[in-house]
Length: 261
Image (cartoon, rainbow, N blue to C red; front, side, top):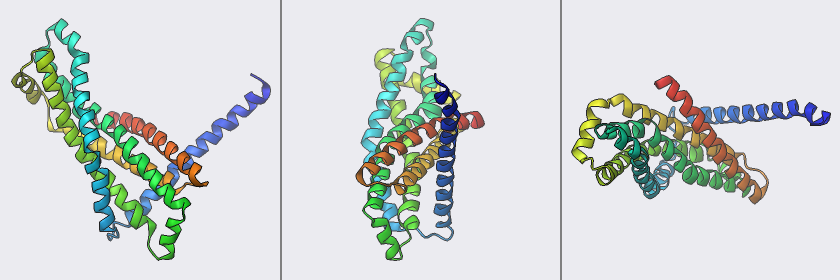
């Protein structure tokens, strides 16, 4: 490594840290502006309903497919150990516990980010480069109340609802696979899960999903509204949004797991 490269390394690290700090600060300000539109409520109801349908209802097929195969894969991966230690009585609890607390919220958030977050960043970025956002301001329409706040609310509400549905589908997938692969009857599966699971196990997963939804919403809205440079800029914003949200999801998952237990 040359001396020039060695001396340039601290500058690059510092520039990266400043860039991350700038993005986090921008998203925090955007969250504050969105929350201000809720007290008193200044949210476009039509946009809210439209986004609830577009981001939630239209995401049902991919979420159901992901959850079903996730539940089946967990049982398949655990099958050798279950057979070796004759732990069939614990397969229901293990699959349900992992699904509710960790796998369900995390995988659904990543799928939601890839589908909804990327689409939201692209849509807002296109509106910025085609000057539609400036047109809203010219018509005295608040872009935050009209575009951002409904999308944040829709993402947080729908990702929690999709997580509830996905958890149920994943447990059913685990149950069916356990019956077919390990000869664990559904009654045995349920009997091993219910006594060892508590309401907090489900609540933790829902809290995580709400945090992930807020992370995806803020990231996609921030990078979408920060788009510059025409069509190539839209592509860069979508890429940056998906990567930043995915990284934030894992960081938030670690911190929430540490705090919530």
